[in-house]
Image 1 (tube, rainbow, N blue to C red):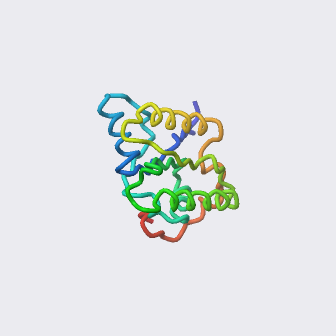
Image 2 (image 1 turned 60 degrees about the horizontal axis):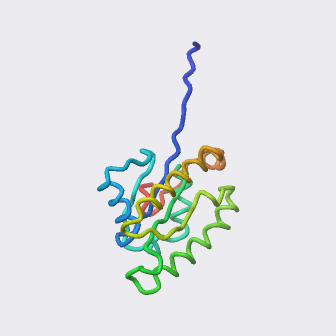
Length: 156
């Protein structure tokens, strides 16, 4: 064996999980002592409408390979929250394409408090997709090699 080492990169999945939906679903998965992939990071949020389009783009640029937005859909406790979230996500898709990021890396889905099977299925499906398309670094290439200015809220 030569002096080079083979570096494998495990894709990272961020779940934006609303307290009234996705996070409760993730909690239900935990209460059932059901495992899901260790490359998943769950961030609880009150409503995903609070994240602007640039948040998603910067998150991909920082090396997160996929984002699952698990919200309570029309059961959102905030008036207009579900609609605003859908509008934001729909504006992000063409922005991703412009930057060479596969839009399949971002998914919006309604997950309820007891939706353990759909939660697990979404995580498994995204991991399967990432095995096929690779990491976001493959798509962004040189952009990620250039230092980026700090972004608000992303620890940049």
